Length: 81
Image 1 (cartoon, rainbow, N blue to C red):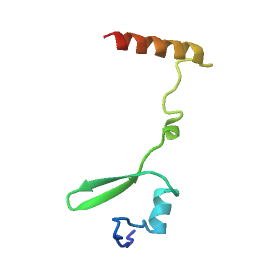
Image 2 (cartoon, rainbow, N blue to C red):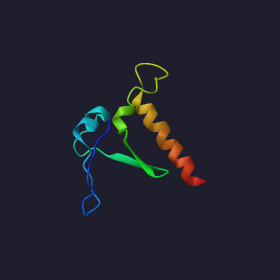
Image 3 (spheres, one colour):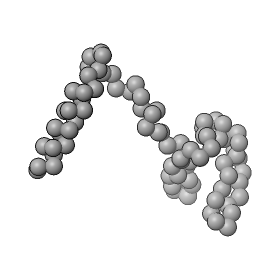
């Protein structure tokens, strides 16, 4: 798909509606712009919540109190060194 836009005096562009829809871009969503040669590639930035479920827990139900304690202990050890 090809879309056209104009760069404003402030350096802003509008991503054409069809391309926004194909990329799944929502209003105020962050994007990353990558320079590749003499072109620029626009990609949506994954948000934190999109990672949900990407790592399977070792056991269910998860013990969040133990996880929090382990993390605090890790930070304490890391700070000492």
